[in-house]
Length: 107
Image (cartoon, rainbow, N blue to C red; front, side, top):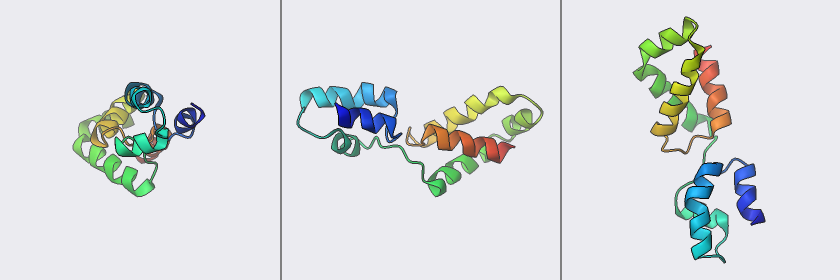
């Protein structure tokens, strides 16, 4: 369980993904390390700046109207951009690093 919690605390896997996908697999295969399961299921998040920057740039380029609205003061759209990045990355974008990058690019 400590290794499972470490995956979440380190940001390698989101808590929701860990609970929905990794925990059930741990119940089925209790002797398999959680990191190995996360790798096998392709669930590890990435904070690699090149990976994130490419996806963020694509999302911003695909939504110029929303970018303009954000820059005019509609700051609530940050959630929209985060959702689009998470969708485009299939959940692999590490949220904290992604949020910082989106805010910087929009700023």
